[in-house]
Length: 291
Image (cartoon, rainbow, N blue to C red):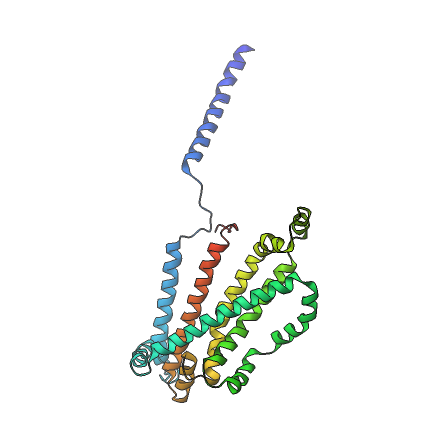
């Protein structure tokens, strides 16, 4: 009986040693990469490759298909027209005008939208009284106000600025107001139990809870700001990239229109990227999904 126990103890010990060795090897090998993980370099190379393929198709496909350059200009046509616009059309002045009004309208519209959203969120009575009028202004097409502002204020920068402010204002107002309605009531009741006043509850609980929604509204407003200033310039401006679009349309200069659209897109991307960087700094305490 003792002999059989001795013979069976050896393989069991061997199994234990092998399992321990396997565990040690697994611990030293490091965590396995997730099956769908890709490196940033791969993403960058893929994006650059797609962009290069798109530009090559834009350059060679229209001539190959017999599309005239006044319908779809090639990339080289755009480059030549861009150089002419820099020299002859004072392109830098138009770009600075659009950027200045877009940033000013975005900042003013964001501040007004956030401030009024917080005020309405703090008072149920004020919200109920003003909500029909705010809803009416939100539904009304802001683009339709541009000719009215031009008749009131003339052909200057004010109509473009006001249209931009209106376009940016409402998404931020709605986001902030909705976030104020969804604040955890248990936290507010707990704060009141500790004798915190209304202003302390606002700064300590409601403002931090509304930050994600505010930042989402700012990202939307950054793209809408470019749309607002472009509408103002298209309707009645004499400077800016929107004006160049109208000017190029009148001259049947498709390359000028394309260049203005590309520059407007780049301005919107830069504004959106700046807001995204600020959001990453402000909301650093929120855990992000690891991809």
